[in-house]
Image 1 (cartoon, rainbow, N blue to C red):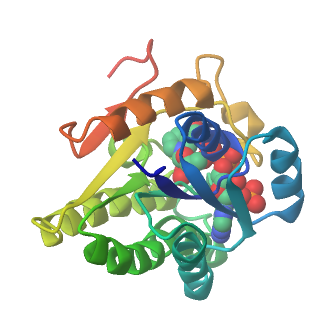
Image 2 (spheres, protein in one colour; image 1 turned 30 degrees about the vertical axis):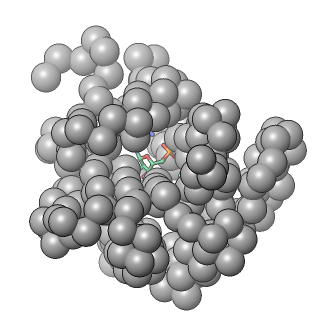
Length: 231
Ligand SMILES: NC(=O)c1ccc[n+]([C@@H]2O[C@H](COP(=O)([O-])OP(=O)(O)OC[C@H]3O[C@@H](n4cnc5c(N)ncnc54)[C@H](OP(=O)(O)O)[C@@H]3O)[C@@H](O)[C@H]2O)c1
């Protein structure tokens, strides 16, 4: 059987980098997209195995999202999974969050996944198969303070997933969302104190996501909480 092909956004750090390494080990061919050329370069140095195509893209731009999907088709002839992992985070109460931050959160965390999905659905419908996997967050359901805009953007991705899943029923395209709790990544670069000692390692979470990918009968929305966190 031909190797499977994955397109992953936000692939050069944190969870995206862990997912990229995990899928490469499973024999996937990868088309990766991330915003920062320096992060891309550093990540590629750690990637000894091929085939990997690494693009610099900004998921807030529809053309960049289309480029990611087109590159998968032009280079590898198919697309088995799209992972909408790129994300940004802000911490601010409702009366302090700026208009710019609200736009950035929604353009990155919601518009981007819609743009990539639009392009991916076209090719997956032709194939009669594929998987669109969105990365959500427990922030969508835990209702913490100073998370109004981020939590709302992650709630939107869960709603988007449910609607798209209904819309694509019967096409052979699987649609799901994986919502992790806190992870030890650069997401909290603006508020490093927010990261807690029991936050999960991204490699651990990527392992759980890999199992989700490999189990087509798994729930369409998986929530993975930190192990010692009370719910
Ligand atoms: N860390 C957590 O506790 C946690 C918990 C639940 C869910 N999540 C979600 O997990 C996903 C991965 O985040 P992470 O924790 O691994 O943090 P991360 O290391 O900051 O990874 C996020 C990646 O997305 C990229 N990105 C941001 N804006 C982008 C854009 N406009 N276009 C393309 N790429 C962009 C970032 O690139 P730049 O560095 O260049 O901006 C970065 O490589 C996100 O969706 C996040 O919301 C994280």
